Image 1 (cartoon, one colour):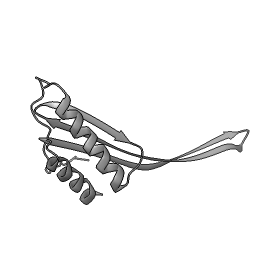
Image 2 (image 1 turned 60 degrees about the horizontal axis):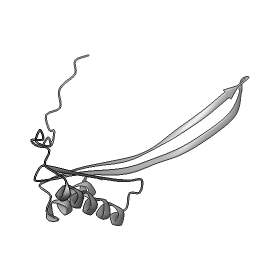
Image 3 (image 1 turned 90 degrees about the horizontal axis):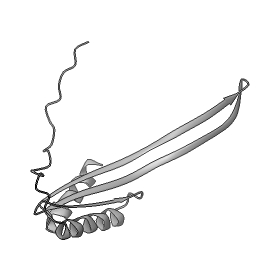
Image 4 (image 1 turned 135 degrees about the horizontal axis):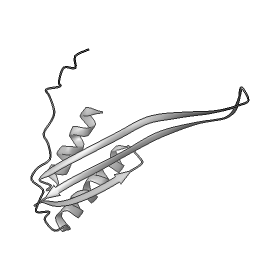
Length: 108
């Protein structure tokens, strides 16, 4: 997933964005309802999604999708970059945070 994320970021930068942020979410949820010591209902859901924030000249563009495939990721990156180029500059924005590498040690 990390390799795919890096490719998406590089693609967005090649489309003219100054900075790109992506999140990809995959998971599942299981819900079981109990009634009178018996299973009344159960449900299992899968959760997927991706989102892109692009900044160009301090203008912000955002795009999301519930699909995670190469074509869809490419489309939402292109859309976010296009929106960022059309957006007015956000004067308070300075920069996205860089990669976090120094994880703190938690005692106990």
